[in-house]
Image 1: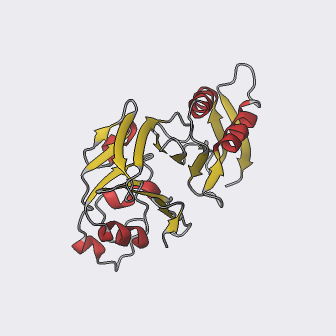
Image 2: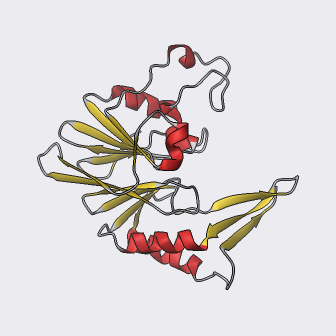
Length: 237
């Protein structure tokens, strides 16, 4: 169910089964802007329901954020063998697709974002609407993008998360932040005017940006001399 943030920003919440990231929805006067497309049928129904022009920004290449932009066959991942949607699947129609360099090989051709892209529009009520797509350093994946809306909200996807590193035959592993990427991310976030941060898969999707920065700084403070990574929780397989 679509959740409302304000008069022109809404989102489809994330879920665990199948795993799907939030879908950010920003309504312009003639164009609807999406941040990620999710992986549930609810997300697909919503994509099909949109009228008029649509532009899509993809945070990173993981399937729970990109699923409905690729072609699927019955039995793949969340698709059950009996699902017929793969036989009638109509690709989502959009005007522009913005992706990071590392996402290029996973999705249809799009505009690769190597530096900030600014889109100017109006909200349905006629107020100014400015969208800024920026590269976001991240330990989670390469080529992550963030979307800043009216210098107030920043959609982050999974960019604040670390990377899970598997070890051994039993799948034991650990979570790790890259020291350099974490520092770069903190610096980028500190330079934003936005006050609110939207992070996927969290119980609270909308959080104060200063709180997110403070949490990332507390992790960065745990770095050790000569170490490139900051290891967190050790996980058993």
